[in-house]
Image (tube, rainbow, N blue to C red; front, side, top):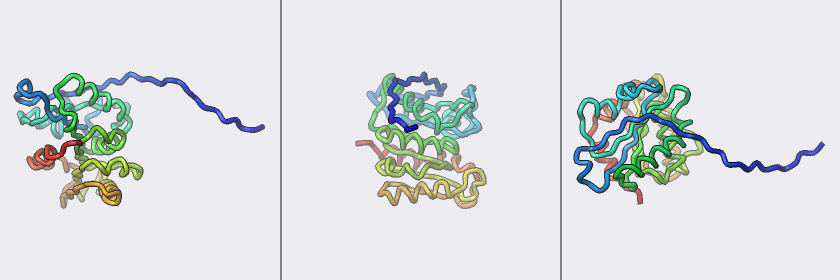
Amino acid sequence: MSQENRTFNAPVTKTASLKYLLYLPVGYESEDSWPLMIFLHGYGERGDNLELVKKHGMAKLIEAGQDFPFIIASPQCPDTTVWPEQVDELNGLIDSLIAEFNVDTSRVYLTGLSMGGYGTWYLASRYPEKFAAIVPICGGGGWWMPGALKNIPAWVFHGDADPVVPLIESELMVDRIKQAGGDVTFTVYPGVDHDSWTQTYNNPELYTWLLSHQRK
């Protein structure tokens, strides 16, 4: 019995559904366009209760009353999956935000912590044309990604005492992107464990750095 060469052709569709927190900056109505920031939370904040998303990172700072010069969307990952498996859904969310709000499409930024750091690498590598700059925090990616990521400025953060996501996860991504000729900055916090995001998001220089990048 021989094997035949066959091709499968059929449309495949799915319905995307993501809950998210939306922040509009002070003075939103007075400007024609604003930068857009996507914030991806960690593994422990998955589910269907958006209050969990406010536990860490940018969503926590917004809840505490901090203002930012971005439109910020903080989606929640369902507890049946993880961010690297939700890249198409996240891309759809970005498209819907661009359609609905005054978004400067040349200044779309992406950041995430822990599982959200992984999600940042995966989403940016799948849709590199979307992002002006990315900030993955204590995450990791895959060996196949640097070619897609080399044209996106990245600032990577990790604690060298992280017992949850080893520092090597970020080191490998940074090294591979540098070898591919990419633009990547790497900050390692000495003695810091898994929580390398608090001081990162509390650093005003991070937001100045992001806003200095614009996609051509």
